[in-house]
Image (cartoon, rainbow, N blue to C red; front, top):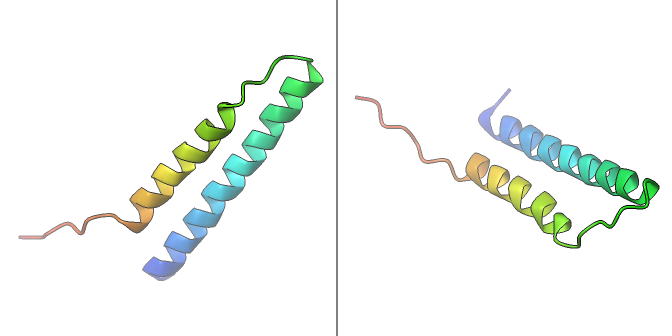
Length: 64
């Protein structure tokens, strides 16, 4: 598996996990008739964005 393929796989995996997690969170929140704050979408968007940014913009490690 090449380095670029690993990055693509991890990116798709992170997106899928967080979209499914957000859907499950919303389903459970609405199912129990609880108030779901609007800013939770930001939490489910910012965390994967930071993770994906770290995957794609990782600084190379210099070897001595």
